[in-house]
Length: 565
Ligand code: SF4
Image (cartoon, rainbow, N blue to C red):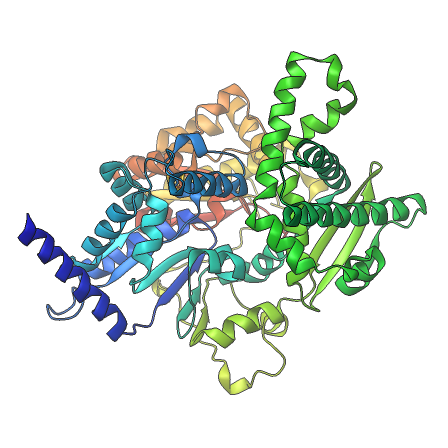
């Protein structure tokens, strides 16, 4: 046992010195969703198998990074809110540090050991989300911390956009982009991603609830708080009241739909007189949002026991369980980080005010990535025209020689590719899908055209409709006539599910609960030589990030002209 321990110690020492001696450039590969990253991991696996590196070359280590939402396996911590999960995990950590029972999966020794095994493995290693969850379950250790630990020495990191774009998320994951190569896949989403991630919203009812609960908190714990903590909580309360007063004044004076710079807002609310960095630092360090949430829950339970006692705060407490506290702390946290590229909007709808801190331009945020990284690659199949992207994304002072535009030909050569506009159907009726033309006759003509194509095109056909409503209308029509049954003679039929529109029971049997399940059934129908038609909607889940390789899409039909939303 002693020898084993000595061997293990020397292994750890060797790894540590190797870590210090070797600086390896990381490739950070980001995409919009985890399912897209899973596909990338699978494709990398296929590439490695097809082109194995020479035996002496160090084997590639690829790791997926994700949030606790995807990786936490402690059921007592599961929640709709990621922020709440982060704080619950941190609380368990604190408990463990204080010698009390914490999270059973948080064993730093085991995590370090598994991570070393990963690094020392002779073969290439890919730790995608599935692998991490399996390793966590098998060894009773936390997949989230395992991913962070294994990422330290990984060659390729697979991460969603927001983890790379948001500096605070990067810092919390311990990701250093210095000298790395960042690849933004599905690059047409990049502007929206920067804008979305830079937006913070704060509703009036959230500030009001925050103030009310903070008042209660101070009254309950006044005697137990240290003097410094008491002063810090009072400052936080003052800050919330300033913001609430400002919103009240604007609403009363009818001055809604205001756009202001963040500096003007800070001046008008008097927040510029306070040390906001100190306030935010205190709120984050003490996890006050989590404490207020816990208190709100307790009050809610008390309320159930004694309805009359808390009648006056009914609505507030119900709302508070949805956790407006993180919204408030998130908002003031963003306020201290904003640059001149931000604007503040105040709007009112149905008598309820709402503040939005939005990124007015993405240039600054992108420039900070460019400063750190060795290079940034934006790739995608639908990037052109790139001029608009360049103007909005690149800093003004960047030299033209620093950017390179490469357009690759399509993977299918011209001889294997046919693109047709179909102006009329089998009976000669014009296929014009303008809203006013959408008659039953047009729907039937469209169905007959697709039926004819399904007789000619082998394997799989994917048909995109402009909306779920129109898809449902056409399919219902075809179901009543003989079009659908004729299609089913040729191929199996599958329909994408809508998050908001219920299809009639006669069509439901063609749908599946999840995209993965639907694609699996569709693939099976094609590989078993039955052939299949998949009806989907442009802009919905199946229109992006799904790899319809080979027989899965021998034909793609687009009904009408899909417009951006
Ligand atoms: S240590 Fe891991 S498994 Fe445990 S609560 Fe935190 S994230 Fe979840």
